[in-house]
Image 1 (tube, rainbow, N blue to C red):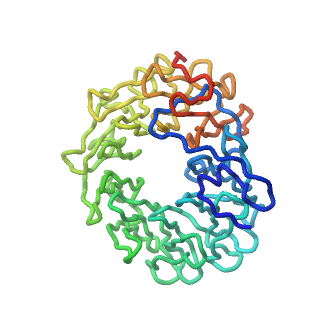
Image 2: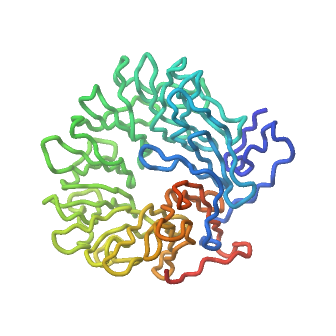
Image 3: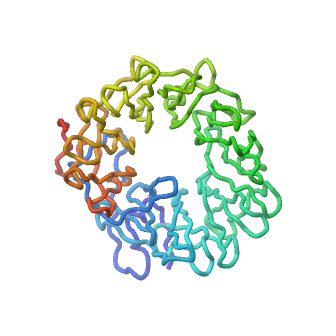
Length: 476
């Protein structure tokens, strides 16, 4: 029996509608009120399952639903309702295939999740799941037989999945799928024949188009744009040895990206609204692009190629300026981990006096300041893995007497506090991948012996912690 229910419901029910479980499925709680401020219920993050695997880019392979989490391990696809019953369960196991690589690239499209997985019969192909064992199946054998089409760069766009895949006639090109074999088709053969263009960095733009990079015979890289109906058009092309170096970042209707040139030490910050890209500014180094309040924020060095600081851009040369010289003089403060939370930008930086600590900015010089010195003095707490969730900032940091452990902030310095240690002492649990699903904030952490687990911290709309102690701000 196949049960197709919305992902937000089936993830909470797990595999309750599959025939082999039987019985009455557990009740599904009503969706939480998104309009209220949220607070953690206590400080303990509970172990709730195996750790999701990590992609080649270091991103944990997990996708939040409205009431539960779906994630992949090296052995299969799992779902977890965290601290809610009935916990974490496997949706489907995948025995090691020819390459030994587990499921990957889990991507939510509407009420289903797509991912790449392999079996002995078809190799590595595209799969889809509604959150149940019976509703988890291969979509299509794009490259017939055991070779496998190796789906990658999965991206949701206009209710469909777009991805890169190979077949014996066209090489590696752009495909799309509605979750059925008949609805899984080649979008366009950009380089006719078996060579292929290996599309990647698929990014929905603010102008309603899908952007991606296509690579032509190892010689040139093109930025492409498609609306999913007409053939894709070329927006820009550059020699492959220079390349487009930073992520495609939509800000309003503009798309920003960074181009390099083989014989030019400077990088070019570019922007397009769907037409020919314009040069915004030449800079020495550009990284950590993020949108906030209609502007692009990023870490960059200036014309001299030194002194990496926080910058912002409105898409014009005049409107692209350094926000603040956090570390005065020629030395770098090297902003990293840029994360927007409402109208404020949180990031880490080293001002030369406090070590690498947590900073905050409203986009102005005067409004850019040290937010919290978690390891007082010249030592560094080195915050990492910043994530803005329901008006709270979650991250990992080190503090005197503690290894790297989870922290959270309600947006005020006095409300920036550590969660309970998961690996007591100086070993640290090295938490990663904070994401909210349902009524929990999930992340992975070590137990101090090297083994990682999925953890869940219960969070609720204000006043709904079911009698649990609400997190109280206190000094670390």
